[in-house]
Amino acid sequence: MKKLGFGLMRLPYSESEEWGHVDLEKTKEMIDAYMAQGFSYFDTAWVYHGGFSEKIFGELVAKRYPREQFQVVSKMPVWELKEESDLERIFEEQLKKCNIEYFDYYFLHSLGTGNYESAEKFHGFEFIQKMKAEGKIKHIGFSFHDNAEKLDQILTKHPEIELVQLQINYIDWESDNVQSRKCYEVAMKHNKMVAIMEPIKGGSLANIMDDAKKLFTDYNPNASVASWAVRYAASLDNILVVLSGMSNMEQLNDNMSYMKDFVPLSAEEQDVVAKATDLIKSTIAIPCTACRYCTDGCPQKINIPRMFELYNESKRYGVASFKWHYNEELKKSGNPADCIECHLCESNCPQKLQIVDLLKEVGKTFN
Ligand code: SF4
Ligand code: SF4
Image (tube, rainbow, N blue to C red; front, side):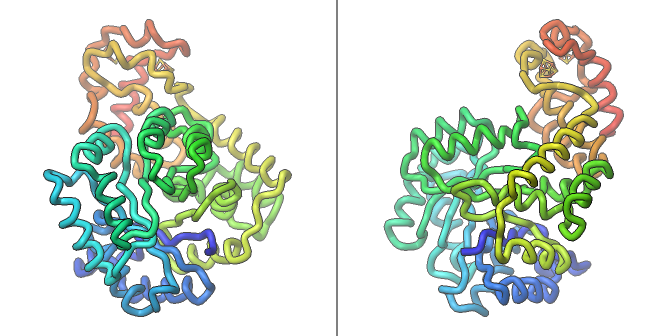
């Protein structure tokens, strides 16, 4: 199987609300071009495109191509489970929407603190094993958003899991928050295959600062900036697939051009990526290391390192791309505006950051 997976979550936009604002005609053209070049892996989920992604897959792929010509993965939205019977209800509906008899791969969606506990509570792991035994799933796994320790804990408890989907890209490889490298190493320790999501970090690594871009184009003027990020991810061992949520034919054609006959990054190319990573990281506005020494004592439960991470990202790639993440974080933790200036966090910060003032700056940036 070729390693470029078609993520069905950022499909071409249409003004029409029908099909969840997805332009079906353009999507069909992209799917046909992708299949024509021998690619075959589709990644969908219950929640993508307001619930239409699976239906679009069913209409444009499953109804139009022989079953043996494609592989498809979908995912169980564990946060929607209210009782155990929801697992079967959702799963059967997914098969119907996708117009198939079985999933090649099936994941518990977005495990991490909270969703993992919900998956355990409603016996999600037992359910996917049962569906596998009945032939309705070929391979079971989960997608993951948390730290390496949590991943190790889940994989130790569930050796039946065959693969994990992780966020891996060259900027997050050593990140203390995302922990790409550490999570990948845990997956290797447990002998799991890995599907990679966010290789271009939501598109931001296609649009990097000029100096870093120059490093790439000086080395190879014919390769797109995005191609370095996708090839970086695909060069790791034991990778099943690297997903790209492609939104137009241009992105698809670019991705296919270097993934059709994939060549891993050479040592020299890895060096160029390392230099670009250093350059991009040197523009980091707040040098927080995400050690979290500041968070435990905060009476307002402000997720300080996450706030600083989002601020740093917004400085590099623009506020618009991170406003949604900021608002999502505020649903789970305290608002910087509610800081009572007790300065407890500052006394614990090994980087000696002026946290109170910096939080004010974060609040100003996102409001
Ligand atoms: S100064 Fe603000 S952010 Fe720091 S511990 Fe006190 S309330 Fe929390
Ligand atoms: S203690 Fe300082 S460096 Fe550590 S997470 Fe908090 S703000 Fe960041």
